[in-house]
Image (cartoon, rainbow, N blue to C red; front, side, top):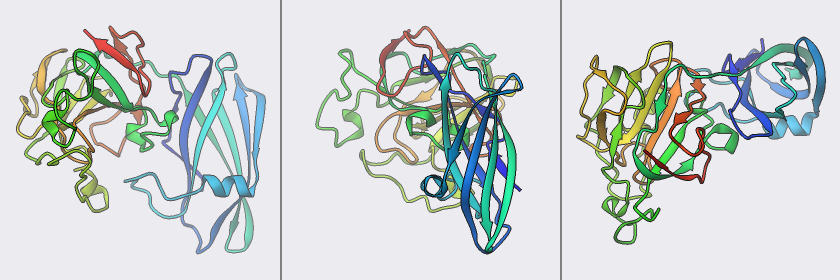
Length: 310
């Protein structure tokens, strides 16, 4: 059986002249030897075909690889895809037909992959005030490929002249302009979970050994919290300063309320804040959602963006 991971594929809200959808396809381990053969992707808009893509064996082999990190589904065949279509061609389904070699026998599998435009109901403000840059961005930029983080941002607050360092050579957390910058709730909601007490990485570039598996993965984002905004929208904020969390589970917070400080905990190579919106409270177990922010020059900042949040 062929599966799309995630089950719903949300279009990236940028770039301006095209739409991008990034997703994985998974064929469960139904045999000892499972190899991709050939794939045909039929692009469907309003019930009619508007184009097609054919991927031969060598192209599929280049797209295959290990599962997205911390996926609950292991083994089998994983294929990573990014589909880019013109914005004026509103493709809403990709009919994916895959030929595979299963233990020496040819089989054909078909699945419809929906492309969905999503507009969040929560009115989001940027989680840090002042000048910032986006260090890493969406999956469409080759960054956060794990399903719940597909629309994630790694945010580095900057100094008054847009400088990353405000003292020293960057060998210490305190050299970074973002270190201990206030983190605020991007919208009102109820705190679904809080994690604090994990030590910050002693210096930039030194990542902790987190091991493998879903339980170990819970430490990836370090100290942080999840806020339930209602309507199946949850904000996750991570890599925060040890001991800086100001909220508790079950507490209501308002938009703009201080919830902690920027740190360097978890799988973080330097002081920054990780933020993403997702459709459930559990990291790695839900789908990431596109997030737009009011008050920015671009409501969907891209990797490398420098801007100032009010």
